[in-house]
Amino acid sequence: MELLSPAGNVEKLYYAYAYGADAAYIGLKKFSLRVKADNFYEDEYKKVIALKEKFPGRRLHCALNISFHDEEIDALKQNLDYFRQYPIDAFIVQDIGIVPLLQKEFPNAQLHLSTQASCVNSEAVKMYKSLGFSRIVLGREISIEQIRRIKDAVPDMELETFVHGAMCIAYAGRCLMSAYLTGRSAQSGFCSHTCRWNFKVDGKPGAENLEAARALAQSGLLTLEEEQRPGEKFPVFEGDDFTAILSSKDLRMIEHLADFRDAGIDSLKIEGRMKSVYYVAMVTRAYRKALDALEGKLSDAEAAPYIAELDNVAHRESTTGFYYNKADADETTTGASDSKYQLAAEIGEEISGEAFDSLLAEGCGRYETAQKELEAMHPAAREARLKDLEIHTDRRIIPFEKKQGWYMYSITAMNMIKAGESIEFVSPEFCSLMLTPDEWEIINLETGLKLNWTCDGHPTAIYLKHKLPEGTLLRTLDPDYIEGKIRDTGR
Image (tube, rainbow, N blue to C red; front, side):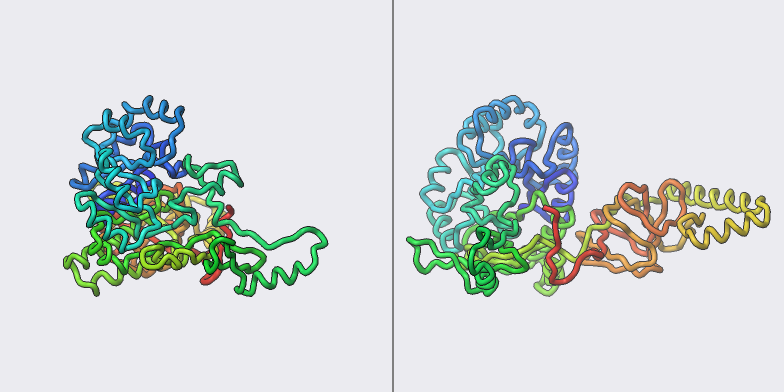
């Protein structure tokens, strides 16, 4: 089975491939249901081409999955020359109005039907096959047994299904709630995730028994039941003056990949083009290892630590969705997706040879200059400077020293990294690596001096006692994370 990962920008595309995806799906500006993702634009096709050369055999799928109005089809036509510059293997579409155009202009690219089209039966699959589609991304409201029946009926059609990530409470994600409350249409890629908002039980001023109503909402006994559907209960629970009746749990199917294989699924899709680099890397890696174990390339015991790392990625409560029991998909949850870890830095190229020697010399030169300035000072001024350096340690001029068996890498910091603390690395080649404070140092890439801390925007290198494989990420514990507490996401 193919492992298909999300890539909201070129950076995430690299990590999707590096951490084990067979294919990745991207969006192009204005034509994707995730327009708030960075997506791809200008001359980034050059970087995408380079990545496909770096990772031979990996595929690239492009999501053109909005509902097109005429003016958007006009815009699509105007951008065809730009699209042709991307090495696109398949287009993911829901609007069949653009199918003839794509078939004419991109004869070598496959057509994949988006999950937004809600294809959940074999007759529809046959119809889409007659239109030229080679793969169906099945509607999320489908069961394992229904998948098996479709594959049996149309064995030569590729089937793809979601296995991990956020789910939409609306049928196949076709929701009007965002457009109704915020004017942002989910079908044009502007979903405000209104279903995740917090609502509270309220009443008109002076309403009697309002407190009793709130108490009932907080009891866990309250459910919604539609008049014509007796027995179909939808739970409503309010806590701390809010309730979530529409926020679905996150999908997690990593423990059930054999069932997808046996049902005839060809591609396993991870949700999350708007998620972080850390999410893309860790979730892709976990499913890669699980698939490798399923295929006998490594043991279940070897794969287990990587799978366990899914708990260290931002997520909500998990569910198996509609795959086994529709009632599982009806269960809601509260709060934002969260994790105890934050991505602290991406590890870049190793600094060695002349570059290393030059940086070492720069640091030593600055130290010597500082010492000479200190020696030339009046004794009283020198004493004052030394006391100041005792208080303000960031001002100290301390060059790094060359250490046998240590390695230096440039890094791109995302969050605060402090010297004197333990840090942890994850990579495509090892599960995790913890370093104690004496095993690493932060170096200023411009001055060659040791730093007490670094963060986003500072030219920094990390000097450490271990050699790191390409694609390694540095993570640290999020200081604001509190176990069991839902954080305010500022939405």
